[in-house]
Length: 351
Ligand code: PMP
View: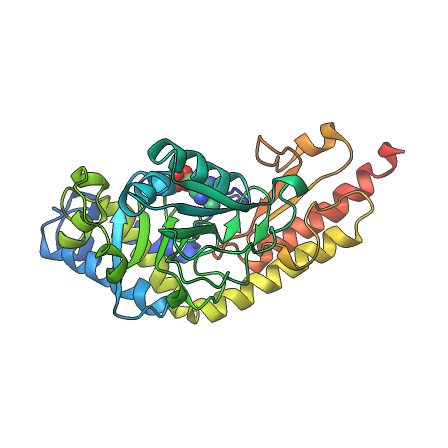
């Protein structure tokens, strides 16, 4: 079979081993005579998947018992709405705008709470090529919202802001790749389709204490308490996505957990950054300590060349390689070889 390395930003590469397990189990899950997709979400076979997935996630992130794991549909984008709706009723929602998705979070919060949404710092003036300096954070807000990895611009917030406010993080593109102290957060959300599994489920880890601050009535499907009180089974959850999430988490565990993932991510990212830094044809917009381990944008001076391969996000142009946990080292080596060969072929065409 033709070997393809998938550098897409999401839906993204999945571990080959996981796909093989899923293929093997597809027609007959654990002797049920059915595919996992056909199982009732109330069946004990599915219930085991649900529970094990929550358990694995909690243990891989080393989360203490104050955390609840919720499975929500609507992607990370719905979290931009649910967060202000649940937590910022009469208080200010504070935001740090580190990139396109942070900005989107603010735009959505502004729809819910036009008078109660504040952007404390933005990286826009540097074209989001650096993480903005941590601003002074007021003590009286409802929460501070950050994006730990800016998927489009390729920057990462490695040092978390110190604040007394509940810390809420969109970790869609680097959950399980960076060994944060995950207990420092009060709510973490991540769309699965980058580092966790296929699209269809958004993982939310939230402290019970934060949920206790909600005291107003909300539509059921937008109310975190409904997900918690019903173990994310108030309605039909995306069972197949959750099953695949469990398989990816087992794979992460077998490879040594988050510390091992971070080590692998550094090795792969360093290889690609070194290749790009040595290149005379390619350049990277992000320099220094804020560079992402997972999303690496780069460009040449020629728009035509930029469009030839690995086109970047349509909003920023250039090229981008996303190298999430499931990307093997060989894939990054193949990309570096390709970059070097491409440079030899095209460098003088530029002169
Ligand atoms: N946040 C970040 C950091 C993202 O990268 C993305 C998707 N690329 C989103 C939010 C939106 O996610 P979804 O498509 O799951 O709504």
